[in-house]
Image 1 (cartoon, rainbow, N blue to C red):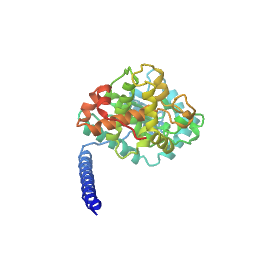
Image 2 (image 1 turned 90 degrees about the vertical axis):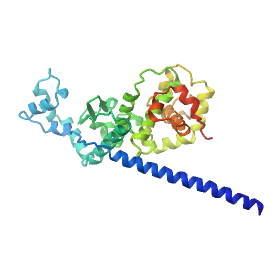
Image 3 (image 1 turned 60 degrees about the vertical axis):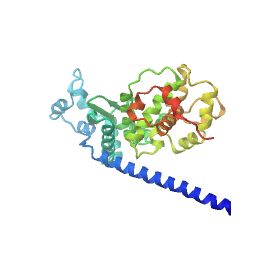
Image 4 (image 1 turned 120 degrees about the vertical axis):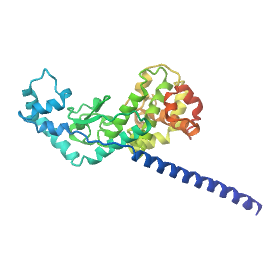
Length: 328
């Protein structure tokens, strides 16, 4: 009886504390959501891909005036007009029209992204957002500048689309429309961080972690697997093996290594990560991005630091105070 009498108050206190924390978190999230929604943002994605394919000899001059940056001066109008009649371009147009028959959800996703970016960075200026055909240039799916964003919309037709049959599976898996916002978020995160050189593997991990943490803030309703670009199976494998991945990095003294090959093995998109073990084929590529993400998340959970302060901190300081300990 003594044991039960003593246990009950403790459990009651713990449950009460958890409930209070949950309620406070919900209130905070609700307040944040309302503040983000209140950010003024008008956006209309310009469907250049559609307008261009409908252009004629008479309408082309006007189109060139509206989009001079999409028409090289040395190229005669006849080439552009021929392109509108090209069978391959028409096939691309048909596929794009089918997949994006309702473009409103995509436009709403981009608008929400911009609202969140502006909320956290009031100096952000909304760019013109323009969709184009890129002849399926998956290496340049989005191009972001200070004033213009180009979206190669033919890169987002779905994992199993016939245009992508010759591509590796790890490339195809993210050629779908829910990745448009993710790719834009990634591009803007790279611009905001502006850290072109990372010398150690730890610096690379934290850099990638910062980018993914910005996705947490900017695209809060997206699933974690969508943010990191994994399939459900890949994400589950990574979660289940996080402790062993981290153990491998530490035991092999990779954190302070300056070996450039580590980027290809664990950071860059790839069919799998290269531990040089039998299980390599089971792992997803770019697994270091996930680990860096968890370190940055752990830092933000365990320290009273603003997002801006964290983004400006060096990798070593973040790592030292992160208290990152993946569960076995």
